[in-house]
Length: 340
Length: 275
Image (cartoon, rainbow over all chains, first blue to last red; front, top):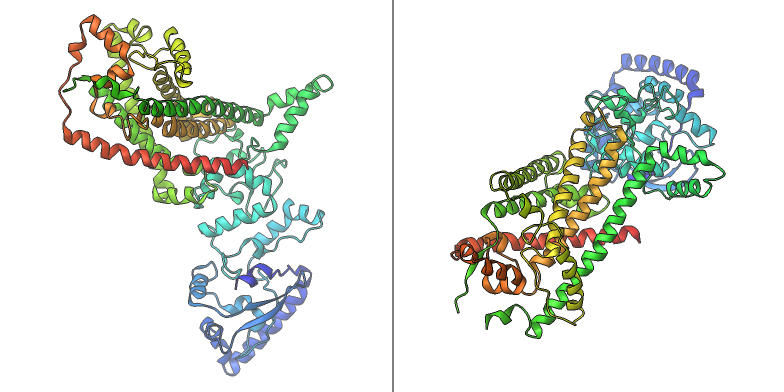
């Protein structure tokens, strides 16, 4: 299962929209005709699928070819009871959903089916709304500009073990996966988020909806760069975004730094350079003085110095005292001598 | 020879110390997992303390206990200043916790003692490192209290402070906490409880009593001062309830061990982080 989850990367096939439309209409007509004729096709319940997929004699490992990378790997299509329960608890696990809703190419198929199914199309019939938002966002544009494969629905909306288990929006496990997903590309941002209070709590596994994770601030489907005023973290919306959790959010409150840089070496380099070029570029110092990150760096450095000084002096002192008292006790000059 | 007992800490001192122990451990055990979130022990500890949000509530309740201890202590000080008119004695002289010129001589004397060229310095009522510990406790409580309140009510504080001041408060709160925890669990423990002559605990802070030998060994100048003033007799006190003495050991020893164990985890994690 897990192998499948990490290698299977279907892509949107939006350019096929008209074709799929024709296909659907013809499928619909044929379904109506077939159901009118006998009705046995509509008996395609999830239990029918699960029955075979839990039977080791009928369903086993199979060779899969990744449609994007062309990578070949072996994966098991067998479901355990736990897998079935996880799926039933997931976003698509309700009574109203059928396997064939997503695996539409199995509609009408009885018994054995082809080993390789078409990639699932989340958008065309069900989720065109968020998809349109997502496709308009600058995140996908930036990925295209950088010549990267745009993320598909299932890259983010994935379960812990399988892409099949679409997590619900408020599911803490799903929210945890989401943070890791964002962080797998935006590593410096994840690291700086993790040294802030929100990130500390989510790192400890508290990923409920009351602690901000990446999409809570940066947007779920419309993800715009923070320099864009219309972004959820841009100047027009930031107060409202903070206010989703923090009553009393104000423009001053929103000056909060969610991504502190005091553990980032680059920050120290830029401070060093500003002081080095103080004669040629005096405005760089002014820029530093206006940047709150500088004050966080200062606070961190001061505390590191206090820690270092305290433990090098008092730590050494307590150790020396300890050894001296032992020596005194051994030499009979210790606390006992007053008793005589 | 039956040894005399003298009172060293008043019941309010001892009660405050007890409050500080309870609240300090509560604060450290619920707060440290956040600072060491990358390590498995922090995850275990956080779950053990109830996880989110219960650990946070424990943290705030313990902060309240610390404020109570602070309030009681400053009420005691105000009483001494306003009613007993002891301001001068509190700020200067052998009974004061303010560092004195003599403390500087004691430090030099101690260096000579440590390297083996002289006897143990003759201390007064408060040894210089005890003064430092007291003053750093006051400083630490002020810093932790202020930054803690900022983190507790971020929106209220940002009415007059920019939002990044809260982030600065988080940095200060985190490293002051590590400083305080490691300081208490190593330096304070070694100075007062883990010295070979005190091991495992110095009961003075629990029973309030100190024996004549201890007093002559640790702070002979104090003994002599009281003797010459003729007030030594006023400090004589009956032996402690043996049950209370036993219970205080039962209370203190496990906490000492927890503190040392936690320090081991914290220090090894810090070292790992820098490697």
